[in-house]
Image (cartoon, rainbow, N blue to C red; front, side, top):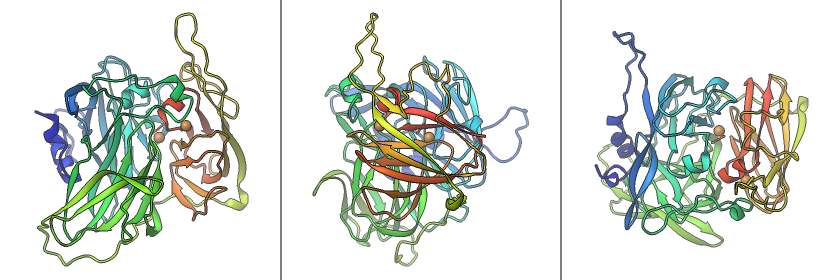
Length: 462
Ligand code: C2O
Ligand code: CU
Ligand code: CU
């Protein structure tokens, strides 16, 4: 089947197209005694038509791009059998989920790498509803860069009255014939990261996404790219931010433009025009100018319900409230390590461009674990003072927890929950959380080349 036929249209179409490849288990035990899975997810080489004049050898979940959309229910167990059909080890990490450390998908730290030909059963409960995602945590420049990135949607216990539209953003480093350019250039890795050459939305260039007319839409933007920051905008006053990185906003506010770094998500609530055939462009803002990344187009709505009004807030997730008066404060400085490291005698470049608190994560760090960046006491509240002492953006991500952004010296903000904070150049920000999830949690920049060249570490909660 042509890839193109799989990647048309809305979230529903995306989900429907991915269903035949997934085994959806029933609640009952299987008679054969064989375990069953809500999903079976393979990682495998595949071919996709991304560029105009040639196919691209991708790595795809279930051989597809976009990857299957995984849907879980808040508070209910999700089981995914991961089958590694790559020729190298891999794992799956469930980005933003406050899960058990054994299921976090970090090689050596939380599980043995899943070898080529091997499999692993991920089984966990998602306590929070929202827009999350999944990706390997090994050889990430290549595995993510070539397509192993997918949406994980956790549905609320009581589903809010919204029509879902998934908008997955990913750039590819391709020549016009569809073959790859080098995925990472050291000189770029030492700066903002190597940008793609071909932008896709749900696997297509500037697609027109059909949406029902006169409907309350939930646009779920996912930045699945290795590098790029999107300044998302609809240029419409009635488009509201309803969630950031999966976490609902208590009081939805008008989306002017939202800086969404690699790995970050944004949910926007919006009532589509009641006429059919109306097109609504979506922009990546560069200053005052908007570059269109895709557009929505209204089609007839078969629902007969009365037109919706307003964009209600989503129900809050059960995130523990930090006890700020009893908090302990720790500081973290993100720094550039200095000049480009020369290649060694085998021509291998030892990249350590970045430091957290004067330490770089190296290629050996997974197997020869360094000391944690900090050890936290289970149940206690912590404030992290983050300082980006570099002239580049860094989307800083913490596994296994959701934190509150308290303040920043660069912008006015109302505290909000998130799993990733995009630090501007030279920005200082404070975040807080209750250390209620025991384990060794990765703490890293989500510009994949940055985490690969030093900007990674972990904290221990015990
Ligand atoms: Cu998407 Cu270690 O993270
Ligand atoms: Cu993560
Ligand atoms: Cu970074």
